[in-house]
Length: 484
Image (cartoon, rainbow, N blue to C red; front, side):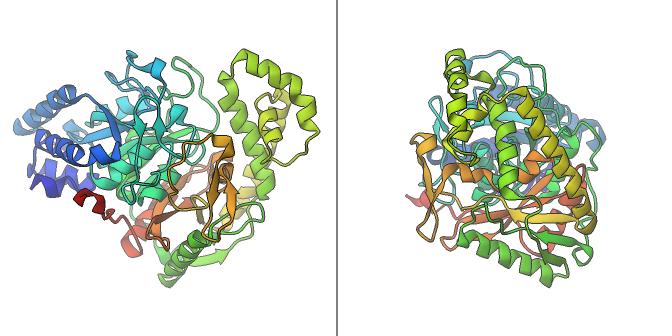
């Protein structure tokens, strides 16, 4: 019984707990047993605190046996879950792939505390790249996480361990984060749901990066849920959000839903295998009565990318060593002579020492983008776009700046082009719900993002729930490797 229940989504597991078909401790044991079976080949869960979790589970079982109901036990009452290892959990401080961060004594990150107060039982941490700065999930502390659809490929990053654990049933819910597609890319690569909230809706305090102990809220980055169903995204978001998000809401009516399909931009790359899936998915939505219009780029892609890199690299370069910063500052004039292509190494290096005036100019342009998008969202409920230009790709631990990704056409693309499709929602602080859309020619999952207006989280989730009910949803990976 417990083996079947652990494969349900979180809402299904909570129903089983509430009706006492299973106890919290039994459900925790089932999750741990599944992790023991699968994790040796996946390396998704990299740290555990089972004793603390078991004590909490016993308390929830005792409270249910004493007659306490759902209102007293909380919306996640007794549900075991894992947490991305960029978030502090009491007893399991965020290591984030940095050896020096091991053994830190911490309090729960704000979102972890909210989930725990709502009844969740965190029992493990899931793998990430070093300081969450890659679309792969490997580091010198915990090693490499493998994609459950193909162990030779990455599950994405930086929430790669989280998406793998959710996709395989090891956990029903996860809390991840996103600044460059780190919720959306792993969801796409592993065939699950995720939600990148409107910027500022969910606290990021207790997330690494920035360096532990920082009090200010960094630009661009968000924390959000990963799950096997859209309804579970809504449930967890309602728990961790700083302002009210309804835990339950009716799905959107697809016959009244207006969708702008954004699949082409002269500056952005998309593999034909991905565009074929996205186009077919849009046709399925239209067949269900949705109004789907093909859009020209909402924002000029090259301009958007340039603003993104100024904001993003200026932020991620905050911890640059003093000597490196001094050298780059001296080189700035020469780097400026090498051209203005925002993808060039020269532009990348210049952004590490961007001036405050340059940041202000990028912020002003971002504000203009946001104003321009308001008119678009008067015509469309959501923008439908790829999450990533390619499906899951083979592991590659070479130097990041030298990496190339091979498209199905044989053409190579720059690794940093993975930033293209996540850019719009990140730069403009918009919500984006990732939903499974289908399979590429090699049977790897492809996901799409439903981008909504600022503060429109409930709207994108409602559309995702309608899609799940009428078109497509989660399907478990075949995991043929278990037989080996």
